[in-house]
Image (cartoon, rainbow, N blue to C red):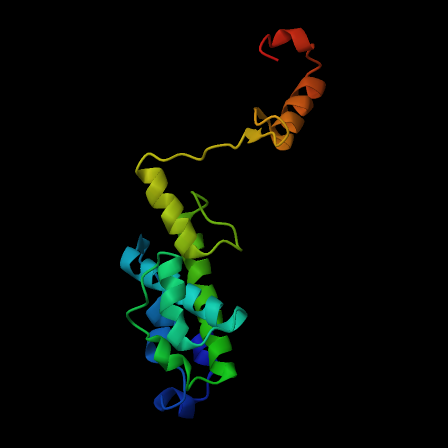
Length: 179
């Protein structure tokens, strides 16, 4: 049973104060016969951010545009922020569940290839995917600036990894002359 089908039949017919059609699970599904519909993925990312900001950060609808601009994300086109006002907490919760179910369906369709973590927003994942496709790779932060002498030094994380490699493989320090 899909999440948006849990409502009473009387609620399905009346959208006044009820669940908008754009936020029903069938409208949010990003896959169709094994093909990913990327325009719906972009909308899903916007909606996920919209509900995340509205529910967790408790930001009112007229301040959402500034938050979207700050995160460099387009506002959703299928659902306007003004439509959040008449929604009850129950419907907001159901919309949030539908967005989560559509996200899970998308992750299932990706089949384990470059999938985001569960707590990563889709808009950040899309930004990373586009950057990776454009040739931008993940850069390790191996060095930090020493505050005492303003010289670059190996970060704690990088030095721990090197220490782990040396002790795990029983390497002497003179194997790597640069150290």
